[in-house]
Length: 90
Image (tube, rainbow, N blue to C red):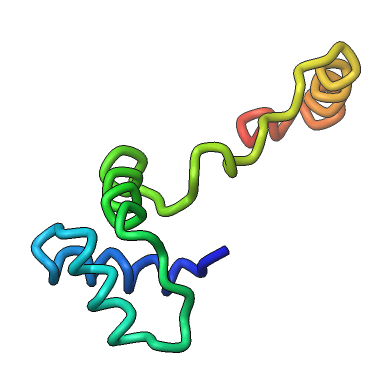
């Protein structure tokens, strides 16, 4: 998995290559010879992901929300009851 810094470098290479995947692939390989070389299609997908979500993180990597169960609801209600003077913080 690539770091955010590496993904940012790839996105910059894509822009410098006038949004050409093959050119971005070559440029990225020249600039960072010790890094993995992604497919030329990866650069366009990375740009699209950033444009659509505002993040380099893939949608399937986003943390799943905690399930809403009766036990969780009861814990929240008990917390509010014990901390009535600070309810605005909940």
